[in-house]
Amino acid sequence: KQEVTQIPAALSVPEGENLVLNCSFTDSAIYNLQWFRQDPGKGLTSLLLIQSSQREQTSGRLNASLDKSSGRSTLYIAASQPGDSATYLCAVDGSSNTGKLIFGQGTTLQVKP
Amino acid sequence: NAGVTQTPKFRVLKTGQSMTLLCAQDMNHEYMYWYRQDPGMGLRLIHYSVGEGTTAKGEVPDGYNVSRLKKQNFLLGLESAAPSQTSVYFCASSSSGTRIYEQYFGPGTRLTVT
Image (cartoon, rainbow over all chains, first blue to last red; front, top):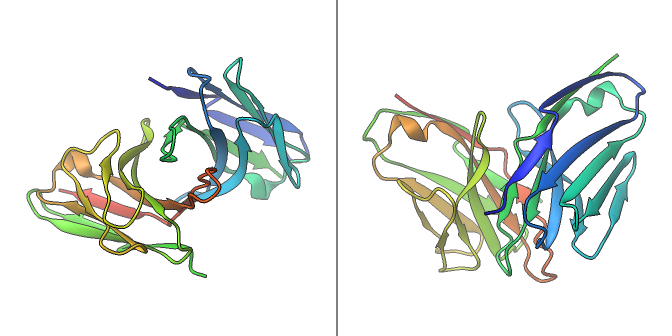
């Protein structure tokens, strides 16, 4: 059974710092991995999706990498800002044709001014 | 484009009552999903649909029923609510055309069962 783990559960950094969020999964047979952002009391916003054939994806200050063989993904946030404060969730799609996602429990990030 | 919308945003039920949560998407997506989010448990898939008229069970389907009579709508029903169903419910949709299934989420429904 696929399990997704995110460490740490919470992280607090000063503004301007570069940071890395970690996601690990137990079954390397995945089709894609998606990173989401969730603000308190809100829904999930898709940040990046990495297909199984890709090694990384970039969007602005965000860079996500994928290493299927080791069952790991990282989300790199450059020059963090207070507006980046949120919970970040990773999810893997291990299905053949349904897109069902298995989620980690998230990392709650606080960026202090 | 409204994306994915959910109705209602909040609801309080008494044990044993029934209700239906409505999810609507205007992106012409084939696939739709219902998740619940609980503290310490993350998001878990309840039911999903790969097209109009089809539904399938996810990880935690017990106590819920779903229907997909129209492509743009996915309904989640609770026939006899229990306190264990107190949660935040999220609907999502994705396109199947490219086999990428990037999911787009609604704002959620916060349900409390007393």
